[in-house]
Image 1 (cartoon, helix red, strand yellow):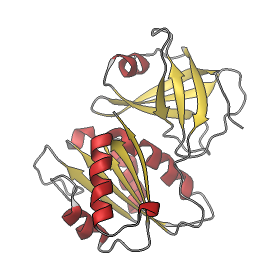
Image 2 (cartoon, one colour):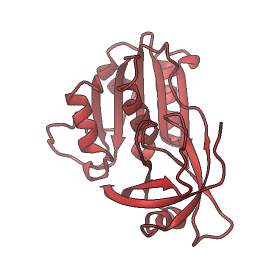
Image 3 (cartoon, one colour):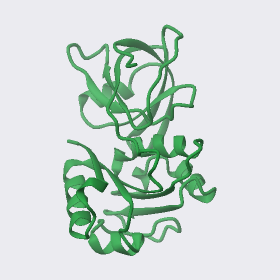
Image 4 (cartoon, one colour):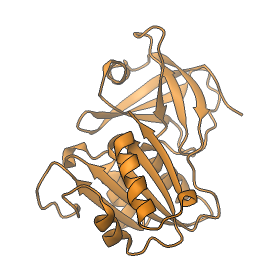
Length: 234
């Protein structure tokens, strides 16, 4: 059952990356909040009247607090990040379904920037579930300082929560030991890191331009449309 238009209290904040913060909430009424990994909520901020905006939940369903990881871009996101501890906001939802089916055995997540948030939730949920699919994350950012969940993702990869983790940086040149590619994703780099496109399900999330480009690359590489799932934003 969906939980709609409830008050949530901001409990704490954490800087995740450059201009990106995680905000941790609990329901003001003390009741539970049920959602599926990969879902999102609509948020109303008291300082902006008459508007709401949707944000993916980056926590997993088995975590105590509800986490929204937000990039500071535009008036609304900035107002959300600047919300004071103990302030109350209105959440609507949860909405959407961007979650792999239980019979998925080999899943590839491809994220651009803040588009990693639903995958972070799903990966954390999957490692605590009975099903243990093979999980691959290809994650593109402009610079290393913009990578959200960098330490957590590296820990997951080290402990086999993620079977393969590949970082792409598009506006930085360097030799960080954990960064494999200093270029944009394309058909050649996808082929390099995926080896074969095979019987996998592909989940793409990022800007519309990013998602459209990767969708086209996968399609031209022989991946059936029914095996590609997308979520994008402006």
